[in-house]
Length: 222
Image (cartoon, rainbow, N blue to C red; front, side):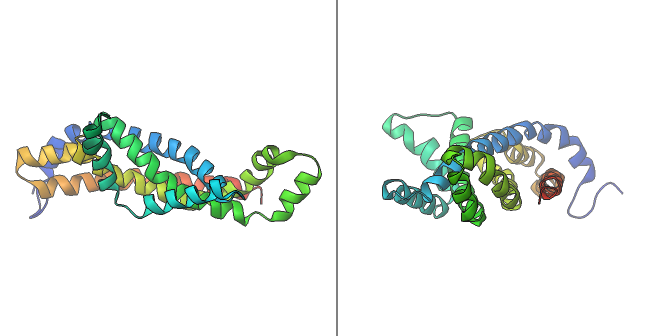
């Protein structure tokens, strides 16, 4: 028997190579956006904790706005809205910008929480030794905060990988967009959607496995 009532194995196997052509784009978007988001998220977290209101309040407003607006709306603003004011980006660029700026808000909150969990006494001791803010942050505080931040940051990355499917609505040729094309030409969207779910599953499981290895590595230094 080649198929179940809701899943056609033969059709799935025939379309698997085509759908997988969207996997590199999904990976590119996810990793690039997460990398940029990590940098921005750290800077926003530091601004969020700054004593100056000129830094603290814009960071708080940014985080609130990004966390309070749907990702798909933000993608539409960048890709379809900005051309009306003569600012244009390709679909790929729009996806990178949208996901980077959005993930940065969540990453900033994770970083803020992780940095706050490091005892203030370590800041004071480092400063008293003349290490300065930058050396204390990079050499003492961040390594400890990283261990704490790994699980929630991995969850953000997992959400980012899955949310990359929204880029299909702005014509980015990633996994889900390829799946929609395959579903349209085979007239069996259920099989195609189940197939892409089975592709996302091991991809996200691999990321979760890497998270476990990183946690074990950093826990050695506790």
